[in-house]
Amino acid sequence: MKRRLYTLDVFTKRPFAGNALAVVADGDGLPPARMQAIAREMNLSETVFVQRPTNNRALARLRIFTTLRELPLAGHPVIGTWFLLAELGVVPAQEGEVHILQQTGAGILPVAIRFAKGRPEMVTMTQCPARFQRARFSRADLAGPLGLSAADFEPSLPLEFVSTGIANLIVPLRSRASLKKIQTNVHALHKILGRDGSMAYCFTLGSAARAYARGMIPWALQEDPATGSAAGSLGAYLVKHGELEPQRVLSILQGVEMGRPSDIQVQIERADGGRLTPFVSGAAVRIFEGVLEA
Image: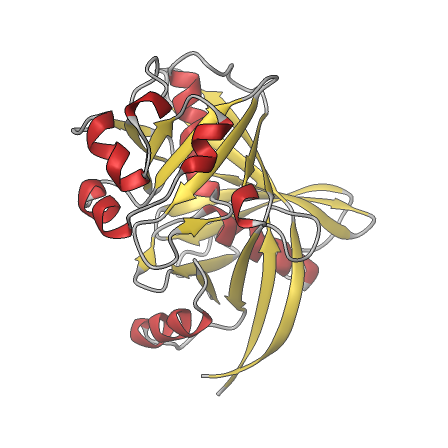
């Protein structure tokens, strides 16, 4: 059966930057094993299969697969897929913002698409309220898997797992020089993260609500050039620890060391009771469209 296949670069406005994404726009009827096989064939950090929702509140259902497994939620797949669906007319264009609901493995979540002159300009995803878990290992334990020394870590902030739909280990470093030094031992990183986190999201703070980050993955791809889920986790972490004010836009530059610079925007809303909800925004560029025999 022929299915429509697209690739996009996400969290960028120019081709061949950001994080590459594959989207199968008509993914109904594919069993999970076949979706996993297609994701392995694409060999990107994620491949999305767009399906009819099983909940009639949602406009579409997104099934998100890495080369190894299905994820309940991820950032650049959501941003890129809805940018594409807006371009294809699945989301009716109108000036300003259009608000829809999507079905994901993490539940029914809102998405806002901002249009300008009839074309999508920016997509904002709402993530789940942040959940925090202090790491059970030390900076010294983590230094080897990341190829760093103890002096590279920022001592005033903790190592902490943060989940806004998928858990990420937030790793504060002293400087961009420390960030640049990272050389991951994939097997050692996988062993230390265990089942608690999908990546080590290493960052250092700049001025004026700017952060610089690298997303280190404990499997074959080794590094992610743009990670929307971890960006939301980082924003919530910084608000929790007093490094970012709620509602202020945090700009994250990621992927520089890979030659694929990515621009991610994050805002954190603090609700009654202290819940921290991230809103992650970005643009995308369509690169390829074709037909998949599946």
